[in-house]
Length: 134
Image (cartoon, rainbow, N blue to C red):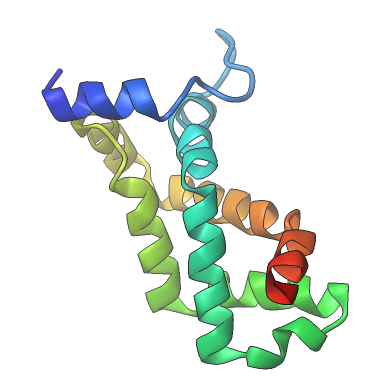
């Protein structure tokens, strides 16, 4: 393991979620790699999304909760450049070994990654509101 890989694994935190002998390779990767990275990068994702709102839909803050959730989902699913930037923020914290594992099933792992990020942002709508007020 390289110095970079060691640094990454030591500093991003423990696995999140259950990993059992019955877990699929995707579930193991999700819980051991993707979830800890999403948690570590959470503050950055919030700031990046706030910037996205400012540049694309400044009236986001006047939307209903349902419309805000729809906007979060649509922005990540339909804006390819934005989605790729978010994916890069996650993939950049993979070890070399994890990246090799990711490449084996990147399409499904990307779907899992983006769905978890969407849910993470939706669950923090109140945080957006409190930060907007300050």
